[in-house]
Amino acid sequence: MFDNKYCYSFPTVRGQQAGRPFYIATCPLRIIPKIFLFDEEEVPAELRAQRSLNRTRLPEMVRYLVDNPKEYVFSSLTASVGTEVRFIPHEGAHDLGILQVPMDAEILINDGQHRRAAIEEALKEMPELGQDNISVLFFVDEGLRRSQQMFADLNKYAVKPSPSISALYDFRDSSACVARYLSMEVKPFIGYTEMEFSTVSPKSAKLFTLSSIKQATQILLSKTARSKFDDSDLQLAVSFWQGCYSAISEWQQVHSKELSPANFRQEFIHAHGIGLHALGHLGRSLLKQHPADWQSKLQNLNKIDWRKSNPIWDNRALHHGKLSKASSNIKLTANILRQALDLQLEGDDKKLEKEFSSNHV
Image (cartoon, rainbow, N blue to C red; front, side):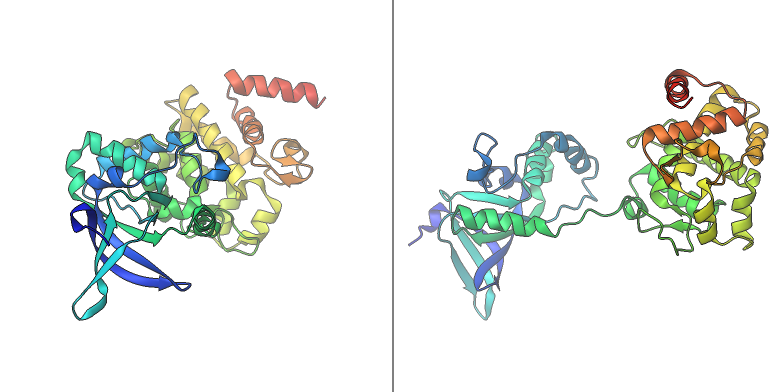
């Protein structure tokens, strides 16, 4: 029997999975760190029901909570209660009621330990978040083996969204906002941007992924994934990519329907992400070395033979006949573009070119 004075009570919906009851409750954030335990890293993996806490993930999650107190969304925690619980149904509602959990019960998180830790840290900076609630899915623990199996099952089919669809839906990421604008307003991207997937299929009518546009523009503007983009950055990106379009006849042929996207991808380097990223590197050097007349210099792109059959791309954009998106290959491809526009190779780019030349005499 329970003594109600020594129980946590949660408004709850009761359900059933695989013949076992479970309970969906709402909990104030302020009590999450107090009642939900995590079996810490000192316990060997084979004796835990969870993976180790990766504390490098926490600062970003904490900032998300603290910076967006009116807009954040956290998904449910899943926890196992290590003792018997009591469910008191409301009159006339068999599966709606109050879940009572003994205060001395061990409650372990099966899924969501990083959310729990982030909540704990965020409350230190913004205690008023403690009035908010989070949903918790409670299971009655049947031992370590069952808890470990629950962790495996909960994570087995989890799939991280593609970088493109993340950029499409993320309105807090200013670089994603820039990429979305470019994809809808600027040639060569209008109508030819793959918004959902991280690759373009061979038969697709698209050319570039939204994530490639985002990354190439970050390179162009010397920004990182965490950088903020303002209106001047957007206008500069628009001008650069429009300038590239006006100088690259194959992009124009695709838009005028003279060249199909499938044939373009099959035959040319600049129909792929590596070409876009290389142009971003070129643009960064161009803006640095020719801040006043970079637009006129950009027109020299029309001299470049982008065909995959051009041996100049061997061991740069192409490795054993296949495109390579390795960082060194992108930079070596960009070096060809820099040389075509009479730009100086500097720093790591110059060193990489020397190494390439010595290995491919």
